[in-house]
Length: 156
Length: 156
DNA sequence: TATTGTTATACTCTATAACTATA
DNA sequence: TATAGTTATAGAGTATAACAATA
Image (cartoon, rainbow over all chains, first blue to last red; front, side, top):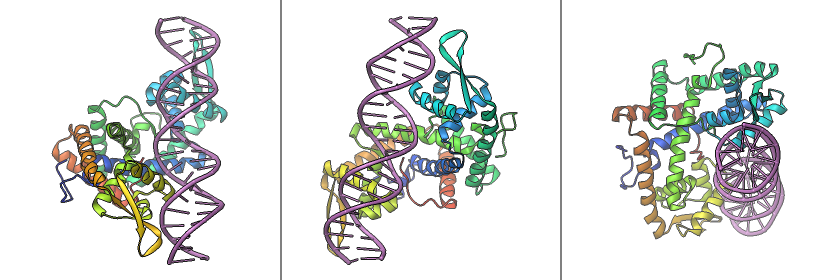
């Protein structure tokens, strides 16, 4: 990196953008995780539910792909949201191996509540930036995502 | 958030800056962690070593404070870097309970090597941004850190 | 009583790989 | 053989809380 804050010639923690990214990200995601505890929900569950909300139906394998996780990991998250009666699974009529996952009516009601928590957390954390700064930050993050070809969502 | 990309009225994942922060941070930190495997070192060990490099001496409790971790967690990281002969501890002459941790000569040599790995990872990940964009990103992240009063480094 | 460092325990998250049932 | 989903196992990372030694 171009900026060196120390005089030793050896890069310090704060010289790396990755350090600042990690520090800020941990703070905002940690706050979000704590806020979600109010609904006894993990961040990965929110991501899965929100994906189902917009897709209507998906298989565990599709969700694993979208979330950047293994099928085994997704299997456990699905078990949790099924236990809460937020998601149901049915056999895929065209493939006896596959499942079709859907939100239950209860799940449909929960997603907007979790989205509200996400909104609140995000608004609060980024409120010290101006609207223009937030737009610029978003632009830079999207650019980094694209140019580094991130494959999945990679929760936590 | 001001921007809504979906038409459902319910915020989607990509509507939150926290989502983008997490996604980018996971990618850059994951890459760094993998790069550090070449030296069989964890990110938390790098952070601890770099803190000792700039402080000359520190107690586990001071490091725990600086890293945003518990003393118990730091205790284990110290055990690992001691096993590699990168850090030594001695009794604090003024307080029989406390330890003074220092880098060994071997540790002094390792820190610049790890810093080189960190440099390489950071440069590669952020190279698609212009110098000006990197400076702006840094400014925004520092601003967010300050206005949200992050206490520690909170590795991983 | 309070603090330092250690340790036992537990919990969360996730990967790997073996397993079954289909295809 | 290959794929979908499940599960057993393991490991990383961290917190909590109890502990011994010292202040």
